[in-house]
Structures are given as structure tokens and as C-alpha cells.
Length: 609
Ligand code: F6R
Image (cartoon, rainbow, N blue to C red; front, top):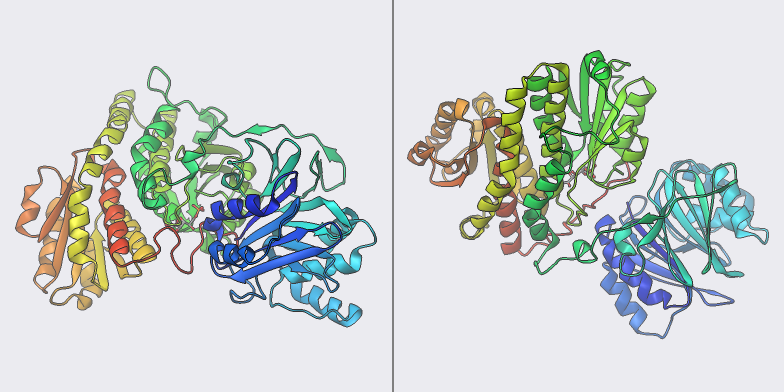
């Protein structure tokens, strides 16, 4: 849950690493630091707070080098502080390391280092254990020391180490945490993710689990766990540099909200052939496989879990297979019924969420067929799945997920349609008309975005509220959960979502004069029922913002204000109705002066349990 960047070459390590760390702040941003190799010494500078604090610290002196490793942290062991910030070093400060992940047996290793080697620790981190371990294992060869340390450490990590006496070399290892190497001219890089390097290189190696790399200015050598050299294909990154930048918007989140029509179009159209058939390129699921499944589990976390709720409805309706949706952290610890007749679908934007990855491994070990819906190409979830259905959202930088969610929804509808058509549980006519509905969504979503000004005005009216309820029925109840999560995570307003029909079983006790209720009423079949639920909260004094389809004007008789979305079939309204909720959350958070792209206590990719 941290970002790492390393550089060796003929340029300024300081400039390149600071630049890269800024692109990785989405991975954590409570402290940061750099270690420079100065030829015969190591110089470490680190401090609590954002990368800008580190820049200020570095600006006080003229420190730079041809080699350096940098880190931006999201605290796991030990609070954010200067001492706990990375890089960490061993006793004589001859080795510096940066690390992303967790060393599970760090207590045991720490005791050994203290009792047998008299090591004195300066921080509360598990990472410092690695630095001291390398210190006691070092015998003139850093690579050898890292190999030995890897044998002694348990956990999920990516780390990079440098030694003062080997001033032209970085040694890095990947074990269940992301790591890439960037290939420059007369220089090479390591990093946790591609945006960190885009300004400098487009040719990269995706490092696999349990691989160790030796990086010098002229070469990147990759070794597998058996210490055998590995040949890796170069991955050419085609993203625009701009795609990883804000592109004129105030925040990544707003930019990403506006990228949704394109993301949805790409996700759908890139998988449709000229006959409108879904082509599962690279996915090997046959008719027999689909007929063999007697159960589907959809497992994910947070927003991706909310996409799974919509997936359940789509697959059950179209493929007529029972689907359970579960948060990954619960799934993995309860011995679920999984066998070789189970299709396990993991949904993850980052593809690095540890809970999701662990649930996937659990399901796989019990024989399930694993299909993942992932945004980050080459991520761990993608690599460990039997088949991958990529979302085409492009890089999502804002911590609050928006375009990943809607593209995940699109994938879920497509998976349902594909399974249903292949299995024969839906007709070709039904399939064709559904695809036409989906094709119209990007245009309709652009219309929703044209309403941005009205939603900004609504935010001006509502931003001082401290409690909000989201209610809805059917697909709207899943969107309520997502709207509520968006609002709470970026504006810190206490918001709560509940299936509208459940209100009267307890929660309605909280509704009083002026309580804000956002009521999603986009389902034609359930519209009357929702009007009754709105009436119930109105009768207790609630102030209600309704969300309804164009033309369903009756809602105005009940709701105080209404946001309309374009007409579409009931099942796919989440693709449209979530967008005003994203915008409302965004503008409310902006008016409250919140740090929208980097909300407090959160990080973009949650690679710890
Ligand atoms: C909320 C949000 C998180 C993620 C969750 C899973 O806006 O982004 O709830 O959805 O942490 O992350 P991924 O999709 O990367 O597995």
C-alpha cells in the first residue's frame, strides 16, 4: 500500500524520483523519502506528510545523485512519522531499502536481530527489519544478501535495496505486490506502477511474483525463484502522458467522471464484432463450461463489490445460475461451498487488492474456474485468473472510484448476456435489443453530464448537511450503496444506504424534521412502491431529493427536488443513475474544502488485509 520508485543512470535521480512519487501518491501519502547513493555513502532524507514536504526538505541542500530509491507511504506498522517513513537502513547505514507490503514474520525476525546481532531499531515498521536483515546477511554482494533475506521473510511485498559499496546497482524483488522495471537509454527504473515512469519511458518489464531483478544503468536482469535468468517480453505502454494527468480538470475525480462515456463505449465496443456478438478474445469459456457451472460467486471489495451486486442480477436473470455476492474479506474466512462447478468472478480496479486476491486463491485452490474483471493490465488478480475481462476505463488515479465502477457494470451486463446467449437461456432477439440499449448508454451518459451545473447548485444547497440517507429498490438499492460510499469517503458526511423497503423495520426511527434523504426511483416496476417509501419519510419531516427517469413526473408530487436521467430499460439504470450521485459527492466535498483526490485515511490500492 505504498509507492516505490528507483532510478539509476545519467540523469538527476532527485528530479526523476520526486516526479515519479507524485504520480504514485494515490498509493499512499502519509510520508515520503529518498535515499541517494553518493559514490561512497548513502544519504537518506525523509519526512511525514505529502511529497511537497519532501521537496521542501530537499530544497534546503544541493543533494542529488545518479542513483536513488524513493517511497511514498501508507502506514501499516507504526503511525505516519519521520522515523517510520522509508527508506530504512541498517545499523551502519550502508544499505537503504524501500518496501511496499507487509512482512508477516517481522516480530520473529526482529527478536532474532535484537538477540543475536544486537540490532537497535529506530522505527516501528516491519520494513526496518528487512534493512537490518540485509545488513547481517551482507557479505560483499547485495544480490546474494537479498536472495537469502527472501528465504527468511514471509508476507506480500515489493522492495528495492541499494548498498553504498555497490553504487551503480539496485536490487528489487516482487512477491505479491506490484513491481515494474522501466527501460531507458543509459538509465533504468523500477516502480510500483506505470504512471510513475510515463514521463521518461514507455518500454517496461512487468515483473512476476518471486522474481528478483538487478538494475544498472545499462541493463535489467530478471531472475526467477530458482535464480535462473528469465527473458521477458518488453511491454510497450500506449497511454498518453495526459491520460495519467488531470487534463485541465480541477481534480482527477472530476476528470474521471467525465471520462465515463468513453470508458463505457470502449469497454463495450472493443468486444463486439460486426454482428453485435460479444467476442471474448483471450477468454476460453466454452458452452460446456458455462453449462457445467451450478453456482457463481462474485467477490470484491468496496465499490467493486457494489458492481458485483448488479452483476448478480444480470447473471441470474440471463444465465439462470444462482449467484452469491460477497465482500472478499468475509468470503475467504468462511469455508464457502466452492468446487469445480463454481464460477468465481473477482472484480477489482487495481487488481492488487489483497483481500480479493486471497479470496481468488482460496476459490482456485478448491477447483473453481476464475474469471476476473480488472482494469490494470498485468496486475496480480489478472495474472492469477483463468480468464480476464478487462475494463477499458484507463488509469484511475482519484482514490474514489468512478469510471472503474461504471465500466465494471458494463462488463457484468456483458458477461450475463454472453453466458445467457451461449447457454440458450435468452433469445437472440432479447440479446440484440439489450446490446442496442447498452450501445445507447454512452450518449445518454453524456446528457447526464450536461446537467452538471444543476447538480453543482444542488450541492451548494446541501453541503452543510451532516447526515444523509440513500434509499432505493432493486438495482437502485445497489446504486444507493455506491452513492452513499462516494459521499462519505470524499466529503466525510455521515451517510447511510438502505433498501427502501427495509426502512420501516427500524431505520426510519432516525428520520426527523429536515433529514436529507436521496431516493432513487428509476425502476418502472417499482416506481409506485418507491413513491410510498418517499411518502413515509416525508411524513416524518425528511427533505427528499428524488432520482427518476425522464417523464416520471409523478415523483415531483412527493420529492422536494428531482434529478432526471434519460429513459432506458430498468436493469441498466445504474450506469446512468450513479453519475449524478458521483457529481453531487464531488461538489459537496469541494464546497467543504476536502482533499477530493486523496481523502483522509484512504489509499487507492489496498494491498494489506
Ligand atoms: C471506493 C473505492 C474502494 C475500492 C476497493 C476495491 O471509491 O475505490 O472501495 O473499490 O478498495 O479496490 P479494487 O477495485 O482496486 O480492488
